[in-house]
Length: 425
Image (cartoon, rainbow, N blue to C red):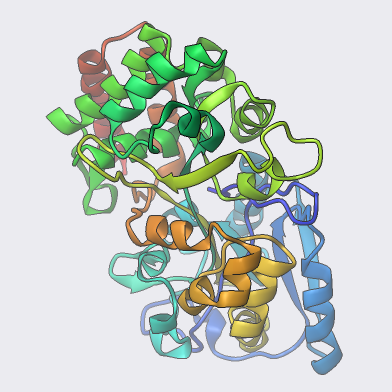
């Protein structure tokens, strides 16, 4: 899935960018597209709303005559982007050489044979934040190289907590108490995330289940693990919040932007969202500029678990110029370009060293917190049929949050419906 892109220089972007491809030469039994070939290549991505990719590719094109990279931008919607990519890949088209795919799509695309395996030795993977590499694997093999990462953060009104002599919450119980008691005293709603039935809800649900010690799927989609006490505990955190009123019912219709606007307009005490919010909510016209902070997500007994967002770059199995495609991705995952990903695109890079760079930390003070969140983060459930898995999670949990099912009933329903998907796969 394509996850939220950050806001760069006053522009909001919704995330999906590139990743990297490593290998050249197909292993035995694999499609033979990666046996050679140099020439022009096409990089396909969701809409680049920050416009940082054009100058990055211009620099590549100036030094690679005859191997120019052309950017193709699909609709900004994750679902539409995925649908157009899948249509092209299923037809065997070579139109797209390098695919900018959401980290959650890697398993599906790899299982379908649409992207080719990657040689781990082609890229300095040990210089990346370790958890991001796992998002690019399936079946014990590397199918892409991370380019952009993301992790959920808890935003809080620092001015309100300071006035109350309170610290940011580290546990769900602390968050619930502050959302119930402190928020109303300041005319605020308590807590919100992204609870509309779409991919964002899958991320929020995965986070609470993992934070409680549970999981949704195992063995890369072959085994359903959601029918557990931790999963029920995670869902109960969300359903109780709506039922008791410290999660506003209105948030059941919110995605990233609706929830960000509510926080930025001074309506929320706490918000779960992606790092892009930090830049936007500190921008001109924001009612909370300079009045909020960000910490890792809380869990039942201490820091919780975020899901990993971001995107990976993979090479189309039918690319006519895989050698050039590999070189392009090496360029895009290099340290200088990764720095530009942050400074010009306002996107979280995957190179670990950038998170402790003094100059970058001064300009992007949330980087140390984001690094901690990424290091503790987990991928969303891996499955060759991830799109169907996500749709089931969204539908079932939204019903539960709307009060139409109890957490116990919702978990049992999840187990049944996910089991059917696993058996069909």
